[in-house]
Image (cartoon, rainbow, N blue to C red):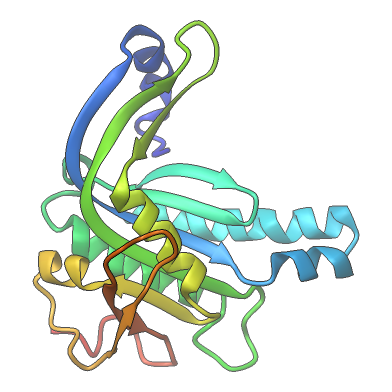
Length: 209
């Protein structure tokens, strides 16, 4: 979660259960082939690698005013909510996806230090306190928007960020220069259109309008 919020979220969650349906953009960053990476390394070495990934990711996301939902296993989950990230929250999520790929070395052929795929999607989700009031409680988001974001990240190959057309439209950005795909996501009846963002040595945002 965002450092400006971490001192208050725990108290809020314990006092007030529930939440509200809001429009947000979700970002999932998933390490590709983490099982194979873990197999080839000692547990401490793998933990060091994942901690480096968590730090690089949180540095980018905090600067982007994201609400960091989870650091779990080989994945980072972030929420871009208007009240925190501002009215340009969709654009902020797209920019953060690009910066995450750059921060992990995907902008140079031999500089990648951890293989990463990213999914970004915009939609309506329930956000609030969930769990058992007298036990474990979390502030998180639930719903189809979250499921789609997770599926996009799982489909993205190394060096790719799948940006849903819903996010592109909500951001008001012209990403027509990016490859467009129609994805049939597991468990979902309707396909999801995405733009495929990859990075190279071009400075972030230079090709955008």
